[in-house]
Image (cartoon, rainbow, N blue to C red; front, side):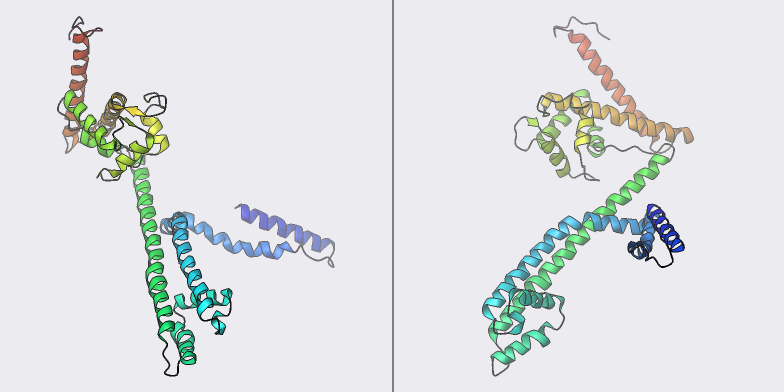
Length: 336
């Protein structure tokens, strides 16, 4: 829309100037700006999901593909330097620029054998074959054309699949959130689903302790954000858990549950994970209520309700232990 406004305004100004003075030359940039109207077709990408997904995937793959392509160019430059040093008597390798272009032509497969390699061998040897030239070009074709070019394509395909999968997940999540009673997601839900199988408060604490040991790779007794995120990503969960800095801040209640340096010790990790289990229960309860509202006792609803009741009983059990031990831990508290 902004492009259309600029084109129309500039065109009107140009027409007004021509009407006022027919002999005046039009604004030089008007033709260029009018040509830019062809780019309005880009707006189609916003409306067609498949096209938008391709554009997003290409954008996300730019950096990794550029890194791999740089390796390809570096290998081409090395062979160009070798060609100038070994075959400088040929016009194709008279200088670095010509040699680089020759090697680039070879990697495209455009007549590298019939127009470059074979004429060089015929000029170099009476029998039309020169082992050095053959090894030079064949090694380049094997390394660059067959290996590196396919690596570039593999990286592009991998990034495309990742971006496409993430885009589909975002669409599915947005669609579910728009529906009444849709399931709500949180980054830690896959591991919270495992923790939800606890039998008692002690069992939940043991599961959290085991999780802490799995995440604490350096066995330092604390978890930084990097350890926390990397450890969760290593777990074999579906989907893979990806925790951002903002997610870590939310999980730790604005870092209020962390130490001064933002790390979590074992006790703080217990508090964080128990709080996350509680929130997980609340999300399941919200979904269960929506499910049971249309199908009382329906499939899956009873399991969630039972789990919620189990968590309530566990919480009461913890309150009972705290009250029984009393403030001093000597059992002077009021029991339930």
